[in-house]
Image (tube, rainbow, N blue to C red; front, side, top):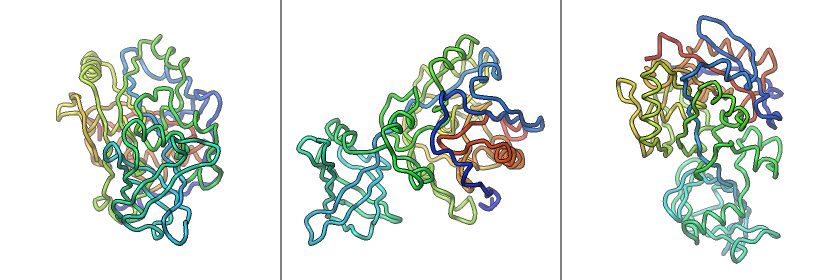
Length: 361
């Protein structure tokens, strides 16, 4: 499909720079294809679902993936800004760097911050390889849990560009940009639909007989990137690692067999569930990478309802929700949200999407 079909104009004031407090007080736009749009809040979610439904949340944990350092060993020591995007192994990460032109293979970047101690005070990494568009592979001097702690000590929350370009990350973001479900470290971006949940909301869901199940998908930085090709068929997705346990798969399949619906909380849960489902819609245990790219015309097999935030124009995420509920429906929903003052993107409001029956399995 033409990428420009997924474009829209968003006023800058619609972009949320901080989340609302409490989290479940965020607004929730309910989108039922062919049935109109309704305005609620996230705390209404238990009343919008029914007993037997199963919400599926992503329990990945965001690491402090934003690092500032300097190239060392040369005549000059220019500042280098690094965003970790994907772990290669115990000591190596793929990363995006600025300015990439200041680095060559074999260069050493030293990360360190006065007043914050990381073992001997510094963390060194060697540029092992350079790719396109500022992407490099860094080989760190430390390994495994020691490296993880060093990154945690020296890094900052990797706020998305549309927030980071307007204000610097601060200590409040350490908590704000992490879901209550966060457990398994590895994401460099938050599964933002999960940011709306609180223990009180989870308890209210369970009191209504609605289950909350967990899977893990380590979100990569590619989630923020617009599609730059003219045709969606030419876009290459970044692969992300995820896992669904046998127990979770069994629970979801049994619930669906009894008439319960699978409610994906966020695009990451949606993508992993669809990657794990067979042709009959049965969810299989899954461990590995997925680069699934969902656009209109895709036949959904595992998911019946989706809760998600509002996404960027021309993004793979807006294409996904357009596939789920219909492009014209989502264009109308986003126009309504902009007119009514909904807050967009990671720290913004949410929508509850029901499947377009012409596209769902």
